[in-house]
Image (cartoon, rainbow, N blue to C red):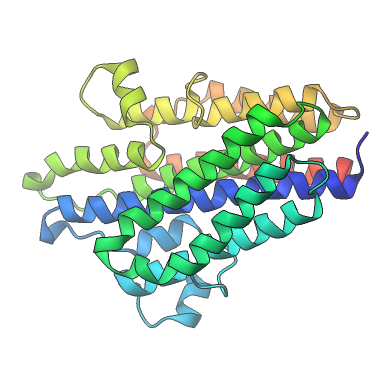
Length: 307
């Protein structure tokens, strides 16, 4: 069994890289969504703060949730532990301490991504450079993920890495579905209903799920189908159920896995028994809270067992 400190660092390195990538996706999609929606259907930038669940803290640092403030907070503000720059700094710190465990090229890539992001972060405030900046964060994170998959021995260390990545991904999927479905143009005027499709499309695009959804469904986009696909589809890598299956398969290769495995299986059963597509907004929110609580318990169990 590998050292608990090493396992902990590998697990958190993967979580932070995934977090940076997910945050970059979110900002990118929100920028495009706001350009597509009519002026009177403004959703603004506050939902992005809500998704990463730091609204109270945000308002201690900024007056209002306008585009400039939210983007600065989410990308470059090191006072925000969930910002892209903070996440990559933590990923780099964790990678640095396990340099003898991960391939050297992967460490160099983590380091280079952090330095490039730090250097380019100010450019994200202008629309002109934002897309390129965010795309470089997403591609940089995916390069690291691919490099580790292709060059790291798939031993216990790699199981912790995959487990961290998938739990982080599961967490972000539930947050996006929760906040985005709640901000779907609430008291929607009749003539705004076509834009509901745009918003569900943005939910899918936040997770690069749009094409895979269309391949699977071949129908126009609808709330029930999107919810079913993002929460219960087993074959799509960012769907909630898929991430839980991945965590289960990682635990399977580790010793002393009984307690954590039991929690994962229990959460899977609750997820599959539910019919999220039939839930009204308030009930959907409660259901997602329940799923997130399950993730918190799994993370706590993994931490107490292995770290």
